Length: 412
Ligand code: HEM
Image (cartoon, rainbow, N blue to C red; front, top):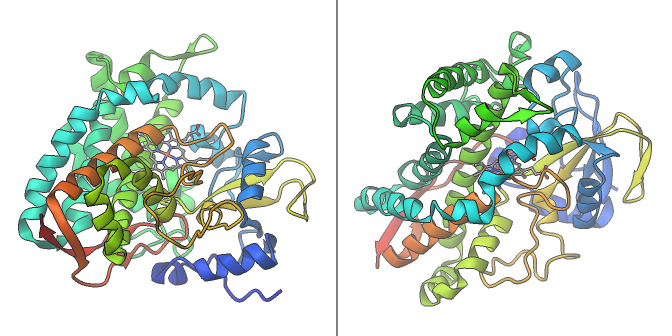
């Protein structure tokens, strides 16, 4: 087996997702050991759909407790910044129970009219120019406002949330943050989210909002967190910091990526746009296909708790195991013609929200609602999209983010 491509080479990811390399790896090395530059210790790279599902289901063997990124934090670092996504049952089950009621399909459906109104407003301004950066004008505007509504965040802080979220999710892109993981000495920030000083800024902002909410509680998600008890105790300040930061980060960037990368997919497959416009009955399957195709979060990492076997590989206790959802989403063992963007695809059991395990994206119904409503509104208002310049990708192997998507939109 040749190992031509280094999946930790972020400059390569900035140019594009290595779909061809993943196709080769699925064939030749479904689960492969990959060395890493110190201080990291290397990882098992898992490429096939069925192995990803197996590992996701078996949380006793494949733990989230050492974090979900390539970073190898110490116990103290982990204790300071552990969020729900970095826990295993039974702790995970308790934390999830606090918030799950706010994210069921039924609970989320109440936001439909709000999201529709917001989307029309954003499009009134965004589409007016005819030629514009879709990320800036549309994709980044909707998710943060929906999140603000659900969590009860003050409107005046939204640009700050967007900016801090960008600097954290894209902590490997020197054009987005001045404190770059893997390049700069980040030791001083190792207890903060994403090992970044901007993680601390997000916590500080969260604490101000929490203090205000304690004075006047409401029926928003933050108030739910403040009322919550686990085993008879209220959440600690550290728990609240971390719940706040994961919700703001996970709920904002990912959905923005799905919307922006979705429009890029339609720029590249104009016949699928015509098909959607001709048949709005395809909106549900189109939403799922946009999610499969764009896979906003490329991977989740697990850590083996014991010696085990996965896809023929012998994994040792303590090894890092990286589940490449972006590769599983193109696996012909699960999807017919996986390299075809087909908005009528069904079934479509994509991995973009994870699958099979307890960490399945908490916000999946919110994200689906947003993507569906934005697609529906665009399909009514835009006859066709074309690129007005090259899209610019974020330098990251974690997120499929776009910094810029210059488009021309032909009005319907
Ligand atoms: C298209 C948009 C989104 C994508 C692609 C996405 C993707 C993911 C993925 C891959 C996971 C981890 C699953 C696993 O470990 O297997 C996850 C977990 C999570 N997501 Fe999302 N997400 C999106 C939107 C949202 C939204 C809108 C929210 C909140 C409002 C949210 C909140 C969370 C939280 C809190 C977790 C951790 C859940 C847990 O550990 O139990 N996400 N998401």
